[in-house]
Length: 208
Image (cartoon, rainbow, N blue to C red; front, side, top):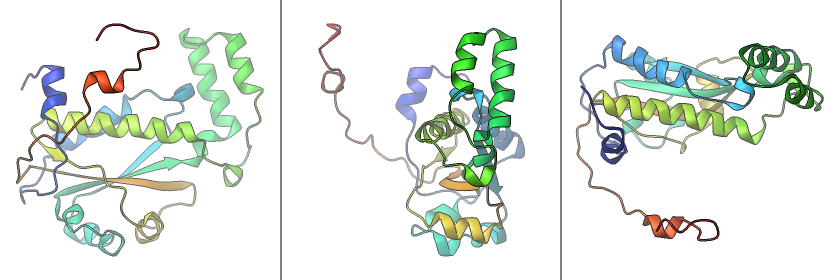
């Protein structure tokens, strides 16, 4: 299915009712691939995901969610940040790759590397931009799902610590969001949005 990008954005909805039909492994791989290709600060790629496609696995997180539709979806991505991506050794590796690719100068890499960074993962405090990185990756997933005729919904209303414990995740993983995915069983109307004129500050442009 080929779709114009603007039409794709227009057609995206937050879906909270799903059919029971399973999502194919091929489509799930494409959604994960969309996340993999997302940009990130210093190419740290801090995102990690747990994919729950079996009902018993989804039930493990049932006590952590408030909205039942989350675990009723045939697939749920548990979206995490890996604290290890912010240790000095891995940052140095990513910077070296960017320099070799010609994306960052050695001078710029040196400035970044001279910043204070922890050597041990247990000393990492996740920086704010890491959540932006994960957000970009998740939106890539959302749009890829939409292009495949699937629905999804960002979910932040849950207990991340309980999800972490229920799935026995390693300490360096921080659970940030849930992304249920499946075939839509509803067609929501467009939600109210501000106009372009309302969101564009006039200080530097007269396009509107």
